[in-house]
Image (tube, rainbow, N blue to C red):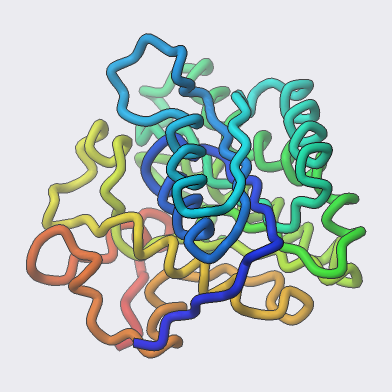
Length: 283
């Protein structure tokens, strides 16, 4: 395996949804490469919750790896809070050169079964939240020598998604915003790309909503390794892409994915097929 280990010392990443799951794994993986982290999310040490993890806990684990970390409470539905948190992060570190839209709300339901308030939650957290973060950071990223804006969202390859249309709409909207920004910032050396797992990933949401079993899941590490593959590239040349994690890692020479699997045997491409029912692995 020839996985990328980009030197991210001197870089700072602003990541949404770092309390647990993929977001936390991203924060720790980038920290291992020397990257400072702005850890954001809704769960804090002060919350009375049974959920494991908090933005401060992730920040502590980042510091244990050497880089600096700043934990900032953030509800992506709050426009003024998004602006304030982005300003505070930039004031603290001076420059934020990696922005990752990771946080998402999820609910898979038929249109007839999903009330308006749940539709609003999916839309406000996913696509509107991605817009607010991108809007707040766009001028800052464009002013740097090179920078990245990445979103955890799928390729836009379908015009319908029965059984999960509101969720799909919000996730595809994240990609639409990100890929459009790639064009808008094309002359500013900002690499705007999306990344998405081929298989379901073992997260609290996956378990809570019963999206398969452990035989169907991989660990969040596969997504983090894929993101490092992106960050090892030149953002002026690597922009406007929608990447699958498996494709990035195969390009890096990975042929055996067993280290990412929770059980023996390769999981089916359930996550890719959520939005592209015709998806088949290339090999």
